[in-house]
Structure formats: C-alpha cells, structure tokens
Amino acid sequence: MTGFRCLGVQLASGEPTRLHPGVHLDESVATLTDGAYRTANGASIVRAGLAHLRTVRPAAIVIDSPADWIQLAIAVAARRLGAAVFTRFASTRTDWPRTVWRERLKGWFYRGWDGYLVTGELAREYLLSFGVPADRLVLCGNPSDSGAIEEAARAARAPDGADPARAASFLYVGRFLELKNLVRLVRGYARYRDQGGAWSLDLVGFGETESAIRRAARGVPDVRLHGALPFSEIVDLYLRSGALVLPSLSENWGLVVNEAMHAGLPLVLSDRCGCIPELVVTGARGNALLINPESEQEIEAALRHLSEMTAADREAMGQSSRERVAGQTPARWAAAVASGIEAALRGRPGRGPRGPGAER
Image (cartoon, rainbow, N blue to C red):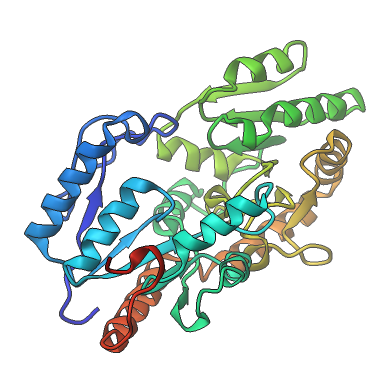
C-alpha cells in the first residue's frame, strides 16, 4: 500500500486453546496486555486499545470480529478518531447451526463498516445475506505460510530431488475441541481397522477433548497422539504422511488444509469446510474425498477408499492439491487487502457510517 505503514496489534499475549511456540514478535507488532485473551480483563484490554489508538492515530484498522464486544468497542472508538474500520469475515451459512435471533443480532453487528476482508465464496454469500453492500467486500482468500512449507519440502528432498517416502498413515492437525469431531474420527478409524485397514492415525494438537479421544482409542491399533508440536515437525509430518483428515463439525475455512496441500497431500474433508469452493476438487483429477462428519460409516469408507488407491493415484491427488492451492499465498492476500483498503479510503468521504460502527 503506497505511503502506508502496517502495524499489528495483539490484544493479549495468548489464548487457552492455541500454542505458538517459537513465535517472535518484532517492533511492528504491539502486545497490549499479558495473559490469555478469553480469561483476561476485557475492560483493561479496551483501555489499552484506546490508548494505542490515540498514540498511533491510524487511517484504517482491521478487526477480527465486531461480534466480540472488546473489538467492537475498539472499532467504534477508531471510527470516532476518523479511522476506517475493516472486519475479517470467515463464517459460512452452514458451518454452525443457526437460529433466527442470533442471525439478526449478527447482521446488526456486521452492517455498516467501511469494508470486509472475506476469505472465500461461501463466506461472501453468507455476509451478503445480512444486507452488506457487495462493493465493500474484498475477496482475499485465506493463506498459510506457503513459503515455509515449500522451503521445508525442498530441504527434505533427496539429492536426486525425490520427495520423502510417504508413510501409510492418516494425519490430523489442529485443536482437540468438540467441534473438531475427533472422537467420531477415532470411531470411524476403528471401523476401518476392523474391516482390515492397515494405515495408522496420527493426531497432532491438544485441547479439552483429549481424554475423550484417548478413551475412544483404547484397544484401537496405531492411534498416536503427538501433542502440540513445533511447526517444523508438523511440516515434516505433512511431507511424510499419506493423507490429511479433517472431520470437523464446524470449520470456517481450515488453514491446515492449505498447509497439507502445499506439501502435496490428498485430503479427506468434512463437507462443512469453508475452503471447499476455493481448494477442493472431487472426482477425476481431484484432490479430496468429502464426508458427512456425523457419519462414522462415511469416515470409515473414505479412509478405506483412499488407502486402497494406488500410490500413483494418491500422488496425482497430491499434485492436484499443490496446483489448486498455488494462488493462496500471503503475498496475494496482502495485495488484495491493500487494494481494498486503498479503494475504501479513496471513497470514504461522504459515505456515512451505519449500524454499530456509526457515530452516536
């Protein structure tokens, strides 16, 4: 963005359901408060945010969600200081059960901002249903750190350029939460083993359902829980596993899908993943098998089908993954975001704010 400087703001130093080992935050990222965001004192975060706004006086800010009261308060204050306010939007119509009153309230929170950074087509369609003007939407995708994965892949290749050998294993990477549906995945995997399947199942992550997952895995061969791993070790698993499995009951996008695709993996995905229109091809020359995440039978059938494919067919699926995800890069995302913010700032005079972002 010509003539602009980009600054990051971390509202709190952590979050209970995520670990970020080894992350270095330089002077371009300000951390406003210590502790976990969900358990911190919200009023303290708001006060720190307002002080930061008065110091920096930004031309525009981007928040993650105006439905979060802390971010809403900071966004309204930024508006009063003359800043344009953009919000990210990744939800889809089907990624979670909806109720009428929640939808009306959500629409009120989301209408009236200067622009919306929308991850994909399903999110775009859902946001438009709230009455948000289409010309304020910036479709920017949802990239992962593709460069780091590709660099690790190059380092792992043999001197002749061959990729590491793929193990006969399914891989899950993510938090251990109810919505990730891992107990049902383990049960579907147990059915797969009962039917003679031989691939192993690697689960990487941590969270509140770990005890339930371990109970479900008792007596099931080759279920391995790795805990939280450094990113370099996760990339190594992407490069050496046979397929990624993501069976979520709710998944706005699924950034682990990007990561696995950059590493050339075929996919077994819940049909509720928000990234499907952008990243998934099924059928001939496809890269994924889609499942109803509430069906152990469909999980079992997809695992069996993929493991019984020829190595050449799975490699073709992995190559399709690489080709499909090629455009989801941080550089392209940044260019789309910068272009959208510049356009909004040019057209902002005379456009009165509405909804929760309006001056009161």
